[in-house]
Length: 272
Ligand SMILES: [Ca+2]
Image 1 (cartoon, helix red, strand yellow):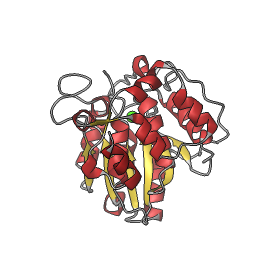
Image 2 (cartoon, rainbow, N blue to C red):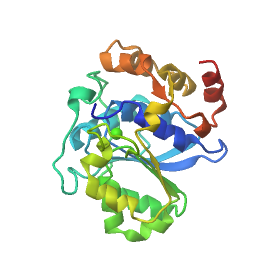
Image 3 (cartoon, protein in one colour):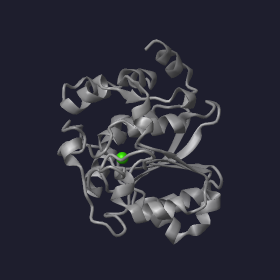
Image 4 (tube, rainbow, N blue to C red):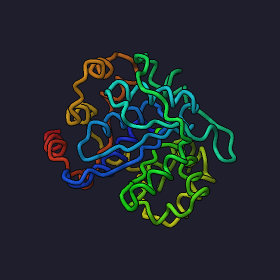
């Protein structure tokens, strides 16, 4: 399996572990990708989070496909106010290896979403990251859920952002075994040089590894219900019989109860 489907959701659980009164400002760096699409919708429906920008990185799909998917997802929830920027077009040094075999030909499990009403922000993703960090020093949490190329480019271009970032909470890496091969997790495998830059930058960093996705499981419906995903188009998306979405609904999704403060989510878990 090239990318464990629910890793992004585990990541979101970690990010959501903040008091509801203090919406955490995040930049969501993503390669959507089915699991990232789900995580993005959860983020956009979470009052604990203030999504300041979405930057797209190649990984599970190409940069162009990921950008299109991000635009469609954000349009689906009527949040065209959030800047969506394209970033790197390939890993720093490695050849891009995508995973359409897992995420579908269009990266969204072959579900065709409506054309996006949102426009692409003209800024380069890493530049947008730099600008937003300087505009809100010590307030921005970076949430990369794909290869770390964009984050690395931002650090390389402007290392002064490092002490100005509140923290980095990333999905990637593996403590006990990978999902690409015996050792490597896809996000790190896809751009290891970028990962090295991000891990060594010196900012507070939380790695939500692939093992977290296997230890404890819950059902996708809990996430979807708890996120108040009421838009008709979104409902139809999740009710689709497409194999990927069916898998997401019916298979186990990872949860670490210790990470969770959302009371609704927590109560739901007690009844599993
Ligand atoms: Ca991803």
